[in-house]
Image (tube, rainbow, N blue to C red; front, side, top):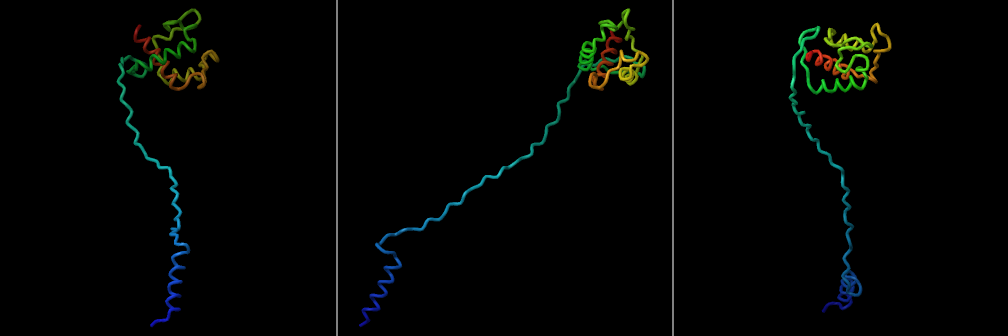
Length: 151
Protein backbone atom coordinates (compact mmCIF):
# COMPACT_ATOMS: atom_id res chain seq x y z
CA UNK A 1 0.00 0.00 0.00
CA UNK A 2 1.04 3.42 -0.62
CA UNK A 3 1.69 6.00 1.88
CA UNK A 4 -1.37 7.91 2.78
CA UNK A 5 0.71 10.94 3.61
CA UNK A 6 2.05 11.23 0.03
CA UNK A 7 -1.46 10.90 -1.32
CA UNK A 8 -2.70 13.55 1.06
CA UNK A 9 0.16 15.82 0.06
CA UNK A 10 -0.58 15.45 -3.69
CA UNK A 11 -4.26 16.09 -3.07
CA UNK A 12 -3.44 19.17 -1.05
CA UNK A 13 -1.18 20.50 -3.83
CA UNK A 14 -3.92 19.97 -6.41
CA UNK A 15 -6.47 21.81 -4.30
CA UNK A 16 -4.06 24.65 -3.67
CA UNK A 17 -3.29 24.97 -7.36
CA UNK A 18 -6.99 25.14 -8.26
CA UNK A 19 -7.58 27.89 -5.77
CA UNK A 20 -9.19 27.97 -2.44
CA UNK A 21 -12.92 27.76 -2.05
CA UNK A 22 -13.40 26.31 -5.52
CA UNK A 23 -13.67 29.69 -7.29
CA UNK A 24 -12.70 29.80 -10.95
CA UNK A 25 -11.42 33.38 -11.36
CA UNK A 26 -10.03 34.08 -14.84
CA UNK A 27 -7.44 36.84 -15.04
CA UNK A 28 -8.53 39.75 -17.26
CA UNK A 29 -6.46 40.76 -20.26
CA UNK A 30 -6.30 44.52 -20.91
CA UNK A 31 -7.96 45.54 -24.19
CA UNK A 32 -5.89 47.33 -26.80
CA UNK A 33 -6.81 50.99 -27.38
CA UNK A 34 -7.20 51.96 -31.02
CA UNK A 35 -5.75 55.35 -31.92
CA UNK A 36 -7.12 56.73 -35.19
CA UNK A 37 -4.54 58.29 -37.48
CA UNK A 38 -5.62 60.93 -40.01
CA UNK A 39 -5.49 59.78 -43.57
CA UNK A 40 -5.31 61.99 -46.62
CA UNK A 41 -6.04 61.38 -50.23
CA UNK A 42 -4.98 63.43 -53.25
CA UNK A 43 -7.66 64.42 -55.71
CA UNK A 44 -6.40 65.32 -59.14
CA UNK A 45 -7.66 68.78 -60.16
CA UNK A 46 -9.99 68.92 -63.10
CA UNK A 47 -9.24 70.80 -66.27
CA UNK A 48 -10.61 74.32 -66.47
CA UNK A 49 -13.56 74.57 -68.82
CA UNK A 50 -12.97 76.22 -72.15
CA UNK A 51 -15.00 79.40 -72.42
CA UNK A 52 -16.07 80.43 -75.86
CA UNK A 53 -16.55 84.16 -76.30
CA UNK A 54 -17.86 86.22 -79.14
CA UNK A 55 -15.05 88.20 -80.71
CA UNK A 56 -14.86 91.03 -83.21
CA UNK A 57 -11.76 92.12 -85.12
CA UNK A 58 -10.71 95.73 -85.44
CA UNK A 59 -7.60 97.47 -86.70
CA UNK A 60 -5.08 99.00 -84.32
CA UNK A 61 -1.73 100.68 -84.75
CA UNK A 62 -0.07 97.26 -84.55
CA UNK A 63 -2.47 95.29 -86.75
CA UNK A 64 -5.60 93.28 -85.99
CA UNK A 65 -6.83 92.97 -82.39
CA UNK A 66 -9.50 90.46 -81.35
CA UNK A 67 -12.03 91.88 -78.92
CA UNK A 68 -13.35 89.67 -76.15
CA UNK A 69 -16.85 90.83 -75.14
CA UNK A 70 -16.27 90.02 -71.47
CA UNK A 71 -13.03 92.02 -71.34
CA UNK A 72 -14.64 94.91 -73.21
CA UNK A 73 -17.39 94.98 -70.56
CA UNK A 74 -14.75 95.01 -67.81
CA UNK A 75 -12.98 97.85 -69.65
CA UNK A 76 -16.22 99.82 -69.76
CA UNK A 77 -16.46 99.37 -66.00
CA UNK A 78 -12.94 100.83 -65.60
CA UNK A 79 -13.84 103.73 -67.95
CA UNK A 80 -16.82 104.54 -65.73
CA UNK A 81 -15.00 103.96 -62.42
CA UNK A 82 -12.10 106.24 -63.39
CA UNK A 83 -14.64 108.83 -64.60
CA UNK A 84 -12.98 109.09 -68.03
CA UNK A 85 -16.30 110.18 -69.51
CA UNK A 86 -16.27 113.46 -67.58
CA UNK A 87 -13.51 114.74 -69.91
CA UNK A 88 -13.62 112.43 -72.94
CA UNK A 89 -17.38 111.98 -73.13
CA UNK A 90 -19.52 108.90 -72.59
CA UNK A 91 -18.71 107.74 -76.14
CA UNK A 92 -15.00 108.79 -75.88
CA UNK A 93 -15.45 111.17 -78.83
CA UNK A 94 -14.13 114.10 -76.81
CA UNK A 95 -15.56 117.18 -75.13
CA UNK A 96 -14.38 120.72 -74.55
CA UNK A 97 -12.45 119.35 -71.53
CA UNK A 98 -10.73 116.38 -73.17
CA UNK A 99 -9.59 115.08 -76.51
CA UNK A 100 -11.33 112.27 -78.39
CA UNK A 101 -10.05 108.76 -77.68
CA UNK A 102 -11.66 107.32 -80.81
CA UNK A 103 -10.41 106.49 -83.29
CA UNK A 104 -7.53 105.07 -81.27
CA UNK A 105 -4.07 105.43 -82.81
CA UNK A 106 -2.03 103.96 -79.93
CA UNK A 107 -0.85 100.40 -79.43
CA UNK A 108 -1.83 98.66 -76.21
CA UNK A 109 1.66 99.19 -74.75
CA UNK A 110 1.68 102.89 -75.66
CA UNK A 111 -1.81 103.33 -74.18
CA UNK A 112 -0.92 101.66 -70.87
CA UNK A 113 2.42 103.50 -70.72
CA UNK A 114 0.53 106.78 -71.15
CA UNK A 115 -1.79 105.87 -68.27
CA UNK A 116 1.17 104.97 -66.03
CA UNK A 117 3.34 108.03 -66.79
CA UNK A 118 0.71 110.66 -67.54
CA UNK A 119 2.44 111.55 -70.78
CA UNK A 120 2.63 115.30 -71.42
CA UNK A 121 -0.55 115.83 -69.39
CA UNK A 122 1.08 115.08 -66.04
CA UNK A 123 -0.97 113.88 -63.11
CA UNK A 124 -4.34 114.06 -64.89
CA UNK A 125 -3.66 110.67 -66.46
CA UNK A 126 -1.36 109.12 -63.89
CA UNK A 127 -2.88 105.83 -62.72
CA UNK A 128 -0.84 103.58 -60.44
CA UNK A 129 -1.44 99.85 -60.29
CA UNK A 130 -3.55 100.17 -57.15
CA UNK A 131 -6.09 102.22 -59.17
CA UNK A 132 -5.72 100.53 -62.54
CA UNK A 133 -4.17 97.08 -62.71
CA UNK A 134 -2.32 95.84 -65.78
CA UNK A 135 -5.35 93.71 -66.68
CA UNK A 136 -7.61 96.71 -66.08
CA UNK A 137 -5.48 98.81 -68.44
CA UNK A 138 -5.69 96.13 -71.13
CA UNK A 139 -9.45 95.87 -70.68
CA UNK A 140 -9.80 99.66 -70.86
CA UNK A 141 -7.78 99.63 -74.08
CA UNK A 142 -10.09 96.96 -75.54
CA UNK A 143 -13.12 99.05 -74.56
CA UNK A 144 -11.69 102.09 -76.39
CA UNK A 145 -11.03 99.83 -79.41
CA UNK A 146 -14.62 98.61 -79.30
CA UNK A 147 -15.83 102.22 -79.42
CA UNK A 148 -13.50 102.83 -82.38
CA UNK A 149 -14.94 99.78 -84.15
CA UNK A 150 -18.47 101.12 -83.63
CA UNK A 151 -17.62 104.51 -85.16
